[in-house]
Each structure stands twice: as structure tokens, then as C-alpha cells.
Image (tube, rainbow, N blue to C red; front, side, top):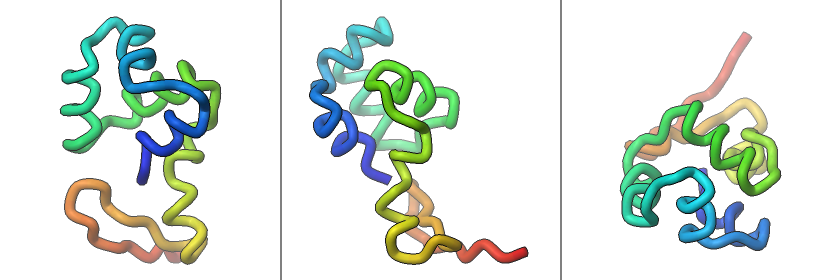
Length: 80
């Protein structure tokens, strides 16, 4: 998951996204370096005009049924 890359590609900065969310850039950076909630990620996606799934494109490109935990980096294979 690379939220900062998506923010930059969307033409925004961490400062501008933080301001739109009503928080400081430091708070946003700390939140992203930890384990952001889906709610937080959705708010960021709404600000930059992308879909929530855009933050996870890098994991899906490797294997569409595998995700990487943003906190520990562990890979999880999704099966039916």
C-alpha cells in the first residue's frame, strides 16, 4: 500500500490533504506510517479524487489474490 505515491500522482501534497482533512501534516504522516483505518483511507481517497482500491494497486499487480499487510508486510493469499 502506497498512499503517499497516490497522493503525489493525484497532484496533491501531504500538506494539502492534511489541510482538507482538518489535521496537521505530522498527524497525517503518523497515521499513514502506522496502520490507517479504512475510514481514514476513504477520507483521503475522497480528497484526492481516487478510489480506495487505488491505494492497493501495487499489491494486486503482483497477484490479484494476494494482499500485503501494511503494518508488518506479511503477504496473504485470498482463496474462495
